[in-house]
Length: 251
Ligand code: PGA
Image (tube, rainbow, N blue to C red; front, top):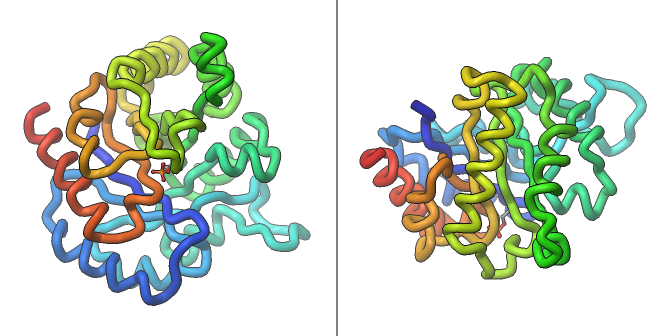
């Protein structure tokens, strides 16, 4: 049984004032039978970890080295040191804005696992790639290079995030989501064996909101969501969490 996960990615948003919303969320969902994770900017991780109750806190990136001369970077150990238990890696905005490759993502994943962090490794196709019918090839390539051989259900989560659905209000059809998630599951089982391959959680991300959450959570091999814009306010994220709790009760 894979435990469902509702993850919020605040991206480069939020200051101390936004921690009130986090406190509210943790009160509303204190007894949740699913995992809830918020990934605020680095500047808020320590304070968020103090006030988040049973909500886990994660980073949005880390360096592949544990320490050293890398001005402006943050290591996985530093994230763990201030209370993070997870880190998002290979988000399409990192791949696009910072030219991160799948090799980089795998190196970061090794570092994160060594620091005891859960990695949420993101994969996803562009609109051009989808229109050229290359979606599964792209996802397969990103998976095989980004995900380390040592990935297990305990240390790794995969997020399928089509680039064209992020922050656009567009979402794939539930059939399209199901096709990609089933493909990822099959690939993971082939490569890592059925034990690890079946226990790694698969999140969908890209314009998830309260209005579409329930239908996305009903899709096969969708174990939760990675939510950007709709995770910034507790009023928006709370109903998504509730929809996932309801999906956990029926599965
Ligand atoms: P969005 O972002 O929910 O705002 O589309 C998702 C993400 O980038 O993780």
